[in-house]
Image (cartoon, rainbow, N blue to C red; front, side, top):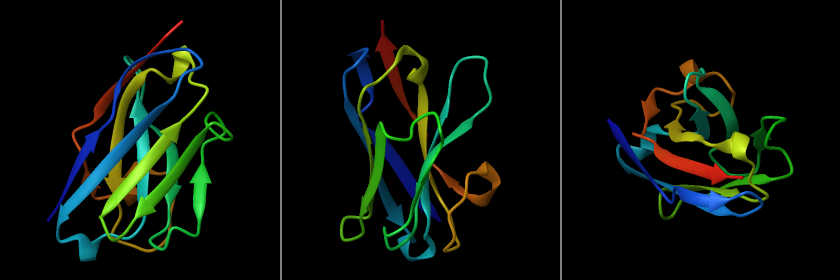
Length: 124
């Protein structure tokens, strides 16, 4: 099993920045691609960003492209999401997810491991 713990969420004004972290533990050798998803109240969970096991390949949703940056430190088993120029519509619970395959994608079903989520609230 793999355990994922997110941190770094909070309340920020529009235009501000936050950096989310996701620490993996357990059978981390089973994880490859990592991703961030988010879920706003009353909405479905949606893809935000993903990164390959090596960190060389990244993939972003159009809604966050140019504002968010995903990265990882494999020595620390940690993945990050730097969020800049935040907007009220970015308000959501952000979830870290880990895949068991090398390829990255935007479908939740591709990721068998999930964290509990961290709340991000952007005020206008």
